[in-house]
Every structure is written in structure tokens, then in C-alpha cells.
Amino acid sequence: MSFSELLMSDSVATLLQNYCHEHAYSEVVVLCDSNTQVHCFPHLQKAYKHIVMPAGEQNKTLREAEKIMDQLMALHCSKQTLLVNLGGGVVTDMGGFVASIYKRGIPFVNVPTTLMGMVDAAIGGKTGVDHAFAKNIIGSIYHPKAVILDLKFLNTMPAVDTLLSFAEIFKIAIIADAQLWQTLVQNPWPSPNSEALKAIVKSAVQNKIQLVEQDPYDASVRQLLNFGHTYGHAYESYVLNQGSSTSHADAVLWGMHQEIALAVHLGILNKDKALIMLNGLNQFDFPSSQWQPDFNALLPFLMADKKNSQHTIGFSLPIDIGQGQIQIQVDVQQLKNCYSLPII
Image (cartoon, rainbow, N blue to C red):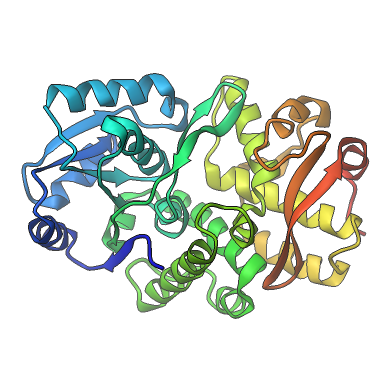
């Protein structure tokens, strides 16, 4: 069963116009942020009505969602209005969430403009906003009608952001696709708009779609995609709570380092395989690699994770390159004992 139509094109403007015409929506409204309004919205080549939200994870809140709905109301948007989310993960998460609750659900399309968005956030129907103490704790599963990919948008991003976004592709390779891992090891940094990058993105997207179609409501095998995110979301929430910011990619990279080490200490991952994984990830010079937050400072954010049971913290961890195990519950004291320990 397919929940979203996946469309890849070198001309997002034509593809979006044709899609809207074919489906005869009453009107189209584009949601963008203050960055994509400038750098991406002109690529649509049509004067769509549009709503602009402030850029940044710190603005992924219920209050901002309410402001977007205020504007949808002001534009007299109906159940037949198509919302087009043009941006990275913050925009697609926020726009999908708004679409799921405005008038009890309106159709939407995601047009991700970041590599992270293309291979992860825009696909699978997970929508939401952050709470002060946890990322994505408020949300819904509501699938876009289509996801439109155009790699030209990557040229609008700083190179370092695209580089960090490869974290999600490495994540998918480690947890679900050994062949993709080999491709990444052989060609870790393909140039923008290259056929090699298109093939890597397509492989990562197909992996995610396959898992989503097997488990649309995140009850079983789809939870493999949470690898790196228990620690990663806690780290991200901790940093936001400190009044600072970090990229989701940076947080997930840090989370994968911690969770690979945890898998070794739990005895489910061979040390040699773990070192191969870490050597791959260490190609990234990511900011959070330079420091380790105190475990007790992270603990409140770990305890807020959606995967937890009553007294344990939930993880999806690698057991080999291309294979993972879900629903691993770890006691807090055991987790604390493993934290910061070297693999060897």
C-alpha cells in the first residue's frame, strides 16, 4: 500500500503545476520559512498564495502552528485547499501537523529543500511540533498526498548543512541497507546534481518508503529509523533548553555515536563492526563531537522519549552493518553506567 506519491524532477515548477491541475484542488497555498521564501519560492515560477513562518527549530511550536492556521482562515482556505510545504524538516513537520488538524484534515504536498528533508522528514507522515521538554512530542501521523524531490534545491543550502545531512543516509545504511553502506564508503561525498547523488538519495528514499509501507503507524519495523534518535533528540532538546541551537543532523550524528557504543556494551554488536561504523561516521567534522553533556543533565530529556516504557528508555540499535533491532529497553542505571565508556 502506498501512502504518498513520490515524484522526482529537474523542474519542480512544472511538476507542481501539473500535479495541482490533475487533482483539481480549489486553491493552492504554499508554506515556507523566511529562508525558503527568498531562495526557493521563486523556483515555483508562479504567484501562489503563501504563508511565511520564521526559520529554525525554536519556532516549531504550537503557537506558530496557531499563527499559520490564523492565516489559513484569513485566506478562506477550505477542505479542498492544497497546502504545499516548501522547506526543510521544520517546515514539513509543521505544515503536515497543521494540515492534519486544520478543519480536521486538508491535503498537503511536501517539497523538501534540504537533503535531510528529502531522505527523512518529508516522507512517512510523521508530523509535529516541539514541547519545551521534548522534540516532536505533540503531533500526528498524517501522510502527504505527494512528495516532490528536486535536487536543485540543494544548491540553495550551505555546503556544510548538506554534508551534515548525509547523517540520515548513513543512518539508513547502518540500520537497514548494507549495500547502501558500501556505496557510501566508496563515494561518501558525491557532487550536487550528480547522478551518483541522485542514486544515493533514491536508494535512501526507497528504504524509508519500504519501512513505512510495512509499518505505517510506527508500531514495529519502522522503528528501525529511530536509530540515533533517542540520544539525538535528547541532545537536541537539551541544547534548545539551554537557549542555544544545533542542527538535527548534528544531533543525530552524536546520537548514533552514543548508540553504537551502547549496542557494543549491551553485547548485541561486535566491536569490529562498531569501529567500521564509527570510522564511516567520523568522516563528518560535526560540532557536537567535541563535547559530552553530563548524563544527569540529559536524563530528563531521555525520559521524555516516546519509545520508553514505564521505567526504561527505548532504543533501536544496530546489530550488524545493514541490520538493526527495535524495542530495546534499557534501565536508567545501566544506561548511565555505559555512558561515555569507550568501545575498547
